[in-house]
Image 1 (cartoon, rainbow, N blue to C red):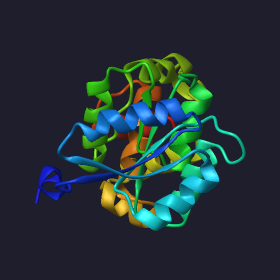
Image 2 (cartoon, one colour):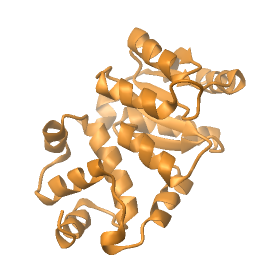
Image 3 (cartoon, helix red, strand yellow):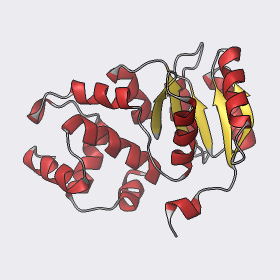
Image 4 (cartoon, rainbow, N blue to C red):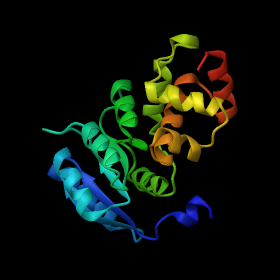
Length: 213
């Protein structure tokens, strides 16, 4: 069965943002699509975890900067509590630190709020298919952060994933070994590929071997 065949007929979405106007705009955008249903909203990270637990969405559209519990912390709680939802970040920030923080917490995609509305819809659908959409500017930020060779700053989790890729493990095996979801593995690989400047697993494995992972 392909990823497309596994995608839900109606993608259940929770919107998390501390600005009511943005939530309303996203709700209106998603309401116009027959394959996406908004099943809940939250204005902070703590409430987001509660709503996800109550509504069991397929995708959580997550802002990062919010009062109290922020989006990175909320993402980590959703992933660690195994609530069965994938987190797609939608934020204004494209700095490397926030991107890495979100992906390391378990987000499977990273979009920016100035994206075209169709890109947001496409991102949600991509996540439901098991893909990891990254806004081009966020990807460039990751690329700009790498300086080549041993100076590339990978997160601890990205290093673990690359080491297992070098060992020949498939994503499903890596997920089982690290006790994370397969989609989280894909997100870490997307980030790591951008940082080290490779396009596929073979190149990543060779890079990992050259740099002693």
